[in-house]
Image (tube, rainbow, N blue to C red):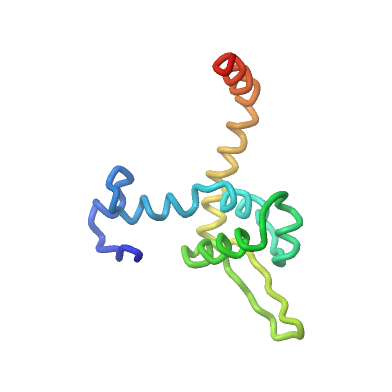
Length: 125
């Protein structure tokens, strides 16, 4: 069950197990959500296009993550009344804002990849 926002500082405290912020963080800080947000970027895509762009994601995981992102107001889902129905996904304003943070994480990964690889080899030896 989702915690209801009461507007208290505790709702935004990631250190508290029962905070709404931690629940939201847990939702969006997973590899599939991050990849979906990054892939949508500045464009609108259909389900099959997203699935083709994100290597390794199953139909089930894509569906679950798109629903979660839509529920959290980060992705907008548009259904067109065609046969078969055409469904498109795009980032909302909040999703675009989160993408800026994700881009920063991607940049950090690229900048420090060699260091991380070296550290892993040293640790695993």
